[in-house]
Structure formats: C-alpha cells, structure tokens
Image (cartoon, rainbow over all chains, first blue to last red; front, top):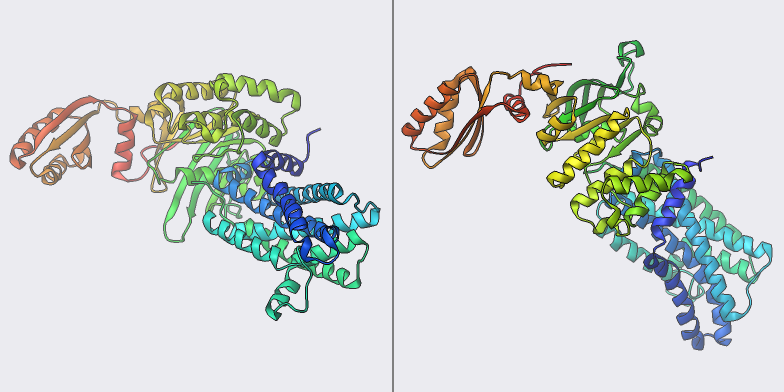
Length: 253
Length: 333
C-alpha cells in the first residue's frame, strides 16, 4: 500500500536535506555552542561548569527549534529557487500538503536535534531526565516551538521575493531571537528595559523556559501561561504562513 | 467568468477522445495584456500535439493552465474530462510535466530518479528496474552518481525528461524539452518520447524548433500573442502552402529599409514578406516575379544581394507566414 502523500513529501525532504553540510549546521552548531559556551562561560557562573552546563543544556535544546525553523524556510527557498516547488505542485500534491510536509520535516529535525543535544548533555553531565513527564514536557515544547519557527520562516519565505533578502533577514532574526532569549542566560532585572521587553516577547524564551522547567522539574504556572501564549502565536503564524503560501506565485520561468 | 464557470461545455459537447479541451481560453497576469486571448483547441487521445510559437507567445502560459499551475481568467478548459479549477489534484495524478526551467533535488542523478519514484508512489519493486531502464535509455549511466546540478545543460534536460518517466501517466506536457540539446541528443530524446507515444501516451509539446515539431507532432497549433494563428496536422499545415515557394534573401549596403518597403508594397497580397533587419523570408506563388523585383529594386536603392535562395516551403515558413500576418486562424481542427 503506498504511503500517503504527506509522508512521501517528508521522506523526500529528509533525504534531500540530510547531506553532511546541513547536518553540521543543524546539529554541529548547537553542539559546539553547548560545549564551548558551556565550559567557556562556566567560570562566570556561580556553581562552576556543571551548574552552567545544566542551565545551558535545555537552552540549547530549545535553540534547535530555531535551527529547525531555518531549515524549513531554506527548504522552501531551495525548492523555489531550483524549480522543485513548481515541479512538485504539478505532481500529485496540494499546496497544503507541501506546506505541511515542510512543517513536519522541520519539526522532526527539531526533535532529532534536541535528542542529540540530550545525548551530548548526558556525555558531559552524566545524567539527564528520564521521567516520562519531563521528556513529554521537553519534547512537547520543542514540537510547538518548531511549528512556530517553521511557520515564521515559511511566512518569510512566501513574502520575501529575493533569496539574498531572505537570507539576510533570516540571519538577523536568528541572531536576535537566540540572544534576546533565555537560551544562554536568565532574564535578569538588571537588563535594560528594552532588552527585558524583547526577552519577554520572544517566543523562544517561552520554549526555553518550558524546556528548562521540564528538564529540571521546576515548571511554574508562568511556564504554562507562556506555553498557552506560544500556542496562540503558533496558530496565528501558521495561518498567516498558509494564507501567504497558498497565494504565492510558484510558477516557473 | 472563471474556467469553472456555468458556461462551461456540457460533457456531451466535448469529443469523447479529448484529453485536453480548451474553448475561448483567456488569461491575463496584469489585467492589461492577455497572455492567452481566446484560445480554442482539442488534443485527442494518443496524439502528439505541438504548440509552436516564439518566446513569450503564450505557450508556457497554456501549459501552466493545462497543468493546473494557473487558473485561466475565462473560458472553458477540461483536462482528462475534468475541470482544473475543481479537480486539480485528480488531474495531476494522471499527468506528467517537464517544465521549461531546471528543477532538481540537490542530490545525484540516481537519487533524483529514486526520490521521484517515491513521490509518485511507484511500488518499491518497480522503482529500481525502471530507473535502470531510464538511465540506459537516456544515456545517463555514466553520470548517475553525479549531482544533477553539476551536469551539462543537455544532460540536465535528459535527467528531467527521464525522471518524468519514473511514473505512469496518460498525458505528458513537455515545455521546450530539447532546449540546450545537441542534434544527436535531441533526436534520441524525441525518439524516446515517440516510443512512449507508441505505447499510448498523449503528448502536448511546446517548441520554437519547427524541425522537431515536424519530426514529432501529429498536429500543431501556431500560437502568437496569446492567439492560435494556425492549427492543423503537420502535413496539412505544409499543404496549405503547397505550390508556394520560399525566397530567402539577405541584402547589405544601400537603403535596405526602402528596399524592403518597396518590395513589400509592390508584391502586395501576392506574397508575404517577413523581414528582420537585413534578412527576409518571402512566401510566393511566383518566385520569378520576386526575383525580377529584387533585381530592379536593388539597383534603384543601391543595396547589394548577399544571399538569395529559392526553395520549397517548410513548416518554418508556415510559422513565419502565420506569425508575420498576425491575422485569424489559417485553419482550425
């Protein structure tokens, strides 16, 4: 019995995007952040290297959702640029299936990357959470974050008309989203107010807080509230991305 | 009025063997100029139907409409008896499309064929044998491990066509499939397509190469500025101008503009003169009259004859004649 259309698209996306170069970016970069930042900044943190590594690990796992999102956006752009988008859309697929295919592939990359980071953390720290509830919380937040950032990048990919502009915006966004979040450091009252607003409005902060809370078993009602906001934001961005994409010109020439 | 509007023809009005049925199809991208301007034609099952025209004539827009990528602004369109506006996915499951531009996955030639087989749900047991047959048929065995993007233009084109044959289809739409191919590869490709046609495939094929339309097509439509100027079997298209001769002429020096203007005026409706700078193609029943006028006017205007040739007309002349006069249809089928 043939696989449903969506699964065939996901298979194709994974096969096309799992070349060594992409994997280095997807897993190697966050892995390097974990190792270099984890040990490099440890001297600045109270409690030594283990404490900062334990703090940073869930942050880097959350960082995977942004990486996965960029892979999703890049997939759309590559398909557009190399003619495969139009080619697939004259095949047996609908636009929505194609979009969902990219979204779910991004999510799988996000989950895979987070699992690899968990493995790296086990190697560095010797322990990781194994309780079903903690793992459910971690991977649930990763799934939601991947869909949010996947949708955001797809929306950007559908709206921006030039590949150069898309790449520039993506790099800028990646930088701001990662460093204005609680991925690498906590939200401190000593931060300038504008940075504090940026931190608090950043969806990656919600993902990082939820993953960290699940990882350390310290989830608070605030984390639940943040996840609810993230869920609403995800639905909105997903709808906007779908709408923009369904109207986007995909014709060749 | 959209393509799926209530004025569409009833199923009984469409020929039973029609694979594509288009009636008064119009499409505009900018609401100012029509890329398709009242196009009507039928493609019958098992035939190779050519769309001939210059770049920008409307061929690709027509292909996009037939392959459901765009929805025509108005008119009726049926592909395999279905309305593309309503049954796009069902149509796409039964067609194959080789687009004009490059389209590859960033992997090897073999990988591209394999992935396409998966995308089209070709059973696993059939994929490898089919891939091997196509790699051999399209002479791609030596480059199977190379990335598709690293190949030459001709090799890429062969990969695109070969890839499309990874799945079964009832109609194949080919948009300029031989661009960038040398003569030998062009004929290899066209022969491969012919082979599939013998097995019952219907082909809709755009080209501006008239020689290959002559080689491959059963019928052809000459399209220009979104309108069909001529539509008939290749033989009939050529027969339309039976007895006519073509005079190829190249002049230089002197007042070439005046030379061609006076030549056109004095020949009147007895001949069709299509000029492009110093070069002209003249279709006429009486080449002697043209030759005598050319001699007379070359002296009067001081132009020099660089090339003069009289020959039997070809499909290319039919094309030039149709496009040159820009009038209504020469023939309809």
